[in-house]
Length: 352
Image (cartoon, rainbow, N blue to C red):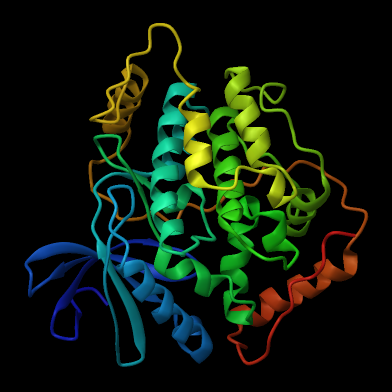
């Protein structure tokens, strides 16, 4: 599709990423003469009319958001059966890329990033829009260490329990809240749980729950004890460890209830003697080091999004229950790949 012009306005210049939901292009808005990011839905999703309808509804809702820590949604459209969303083009790299390169982030850096994610989530929650898919690959970090949260327009559509959404759901399980995985009611605390998973991964270097299968990870989110971040290898203060554990509580009522509450708790963390934080630029001595490493590790090309798959830690964790449920998930995934999008898939009850 390179050099294709969508609706006489958006030129597709280069493919810069892809995931289960869409192929992402660096593009150019011929009318406003600016660079943009264009996400074109994959054909299996475009063929699902209920998915497409929800996709447009959520994209329009996301377009109403305007915040320094949220990637702006500019437009949605369709041409010859291809549905697309146009977003602000953000220079930088994903948090997933940074974690993969650095393994563990210093506490001050992790807290700084988490604070900015909170600011973005707070703005969306005040607009009654849940993200539903907070994970490192949906968090962009600019060269000035400013966090930009992306994919507000796709998240809810991806979580619709249709076969066309199975692939996207499977990719998000490592960061999903217990209520998302068990069919419960979602709230701002659901997004904050996902933030807790991201925070844990930033400071420990791995996700809190690992298993051989996606089902095993899902069951761990619902049933397994919350791992202690410090005991898991994080070099962080007890205050930050407490924040992470609170965010990862199984019952949503036991977590922070708002992004504002979480932000207040995070502001009490991450400041150690000798750290100097520049609130205006979003950088401190640690983030400056990370930036220098990034400049030597990448070719400098700006990325609107990178489809970095979750790094599964293939520990030999025995999953003794749920074999029948696993079979259902596997069958659903196979059917999704074959484009069978006509019937509904119920998310299994994992709380037993």
